Length: 119
Length: 108
Image 1 (cartoon, rainbow over the protein chains, first blue to last red):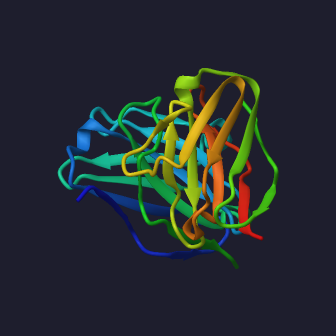
Image 2 (image 1 turned 45 degrees about the horizontal axis):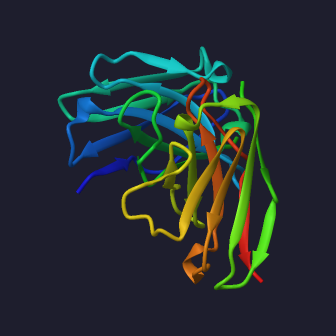
């Protein structure tokens, strides 16, 4: 079945980086865009950016420009999101989600990856 | 950036009743680019409505969406116990793609 499976929970110290993976299966990897959305504890959803797995092009929310990098590996149908210079406010569940094109709703979501930033 | 404001923050209703959730945008959003999601505790969001009024695959017809411009509505008829959750609207027509702050639908 169509699914996005994310890597496990992470605990990082302030100033470190984290890299979360999102492995796609059950569909043609390069036919759908992947977005990253995060949710701080008890808070709402925040869009971080998008990657086109076909060519690798990316677009990031201005808030995360310079700190986030999204990449993909077509050989394993996996997308990665790396966030650097972590601070406590980055503690959140990070989700990947797919859309059929850049400007489309997110129809399939990963299960989420909890990232905790703590000294 | 388009800001989406959802109301009410919390809605207390009983099973069998109708729920009406509102989403107001700070500037006009094409109805092609407005979605609604449902999120239950500990779970990822689930797409309910896209294009303001089209139900996603497998979504029961008691869920319906409407609206245009800056005002959009999610209506849930005949509430079932599994419908009590948090609901988010989202616009995906203009980057950054923004979400509302959510409406919590709780059992009265």
